[in-house]
Length: 180
Image (cartoon, rainbow, N blue to C red; front, side, top):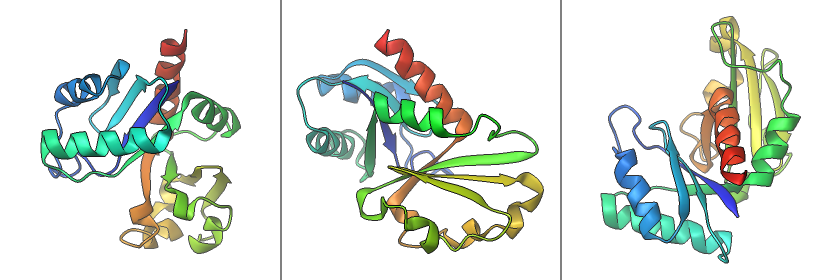
């Protein structure tokens, strides 16, 4: 099975520094194959055979603690869930100089459609729930009016890891290459 591991809060603002080359070795030492890291924000594509997702996550978190002395939360998604997500997000939702689109991958405790009510969005926010994620889209000019800014530092915020849409689409592209 092909997965992407999404590490929360590494290499952000000089904190929780993790070298991607060393992280790749950590994953290979766990027995994972076709390990590919993508950018410094903690995206690792890999193959794992015969293990349940919960076990994979625990193994990765323990290995990161051992190899980097960091307690990092890890979320994994399989190829099919990333593929489905990418197909459902409108093609017009992009990350560029006039628009922001972020994918907020959710841990299980907040993974339900009611999350949109809890986020207290403002009229300038476009958000859609998909199983495992909320996709948020906004015009760059309206960013400071967004209700999403109120989420930072909350319990919900601590139960998600965020990637921009360009990163998610590139992760899917890499996963697709591994699958071929």
